Length: 441
Image 1 (cartoon, one colour):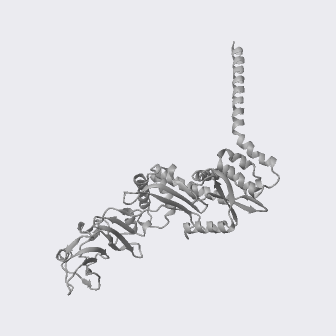
Image 2 (cartoon, one colour):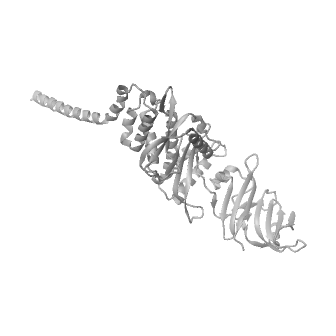
Image 3 (cartoon, helix red, strand yellow):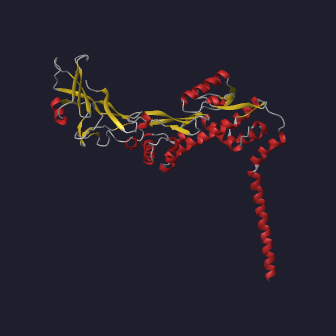
């Protein structure tokens, strides 16, 4: 009985094994289709293909993902320039996504030397002096895709070939680095979309090499970015438009963003550059603009630009002035009036008498440049003061370094800007709040 059970068991095992073997063979046959098609390169290609045929194969792979494996397998190994199937697949996939915004691919053309030089120059101009120049890829042949009806003619979709060792080949270094740059900025957008502060910090940290960017500042920047996109960017990540794909520059257009006024929908551009040291830098520009800022003495708000004040009230606040000057050369009967106290300079606009006497005037700007012992402590909003470190300022306004350390805001009286200057130790040594434009009649 025991032996019979063992025999039956063996038969069951053998049958099960046979079934599994058949399944495995079927799966293997299915999954190996791509490998077999690629393997054909070693069997079928002994001669180089022409520049036109190479461009056609790449264009075909971009046009339809079903053509990728066949295109890759049709390129002789020596004309791959060492490009792996993975890089070829990714590169064509990215260009396909970019190309889909243009329309249906019908053909391609080779750029002339003059067109290529202009293409490189335009890319370098956009990237600026801190990015690797496209001139480092001189000698490449640029291929531009042509469409049945191009819906985005201002941003042509192009890829590169090169002439090497007597034959035209894929441009492996160009494509691989373009894919690398694309992956980096894609990860940036994903971390923002996922509200992943820690992940976003790891992306922006390598871009911020100055010692002013302490860990708390980097975290503040990451938090700001996530909040900004959540509150102001209406487009989903899938709706972002890839405009430029180069090894030195990747550019995206975000179609729908609420502007600084909160009233209009605008598009905005986000660029990634490859710096000269090989590291990436993402330019995601913000206008450092927000709520009104008040001038405070000992923590109490006392002055607002744009309002009219009596001279007597100003003297009550500050005491006797160190300097008082009336500019008699002002036009249309409006004079500039400067009055300076210990560490504070106020500028007014008013209509003094011929002898320079004035009783009231409109406050135009406030400059704080010192806080001597015994003087009232002058701050803006109770948290911005002369002597604070630049890192402390970045904790208050995380993106103000993107705007030249200028912060703007609007009131019913007009538009104003807050400007900061620093000493050699990167401490604030002057703050100026001044009028940009006035709504006063």
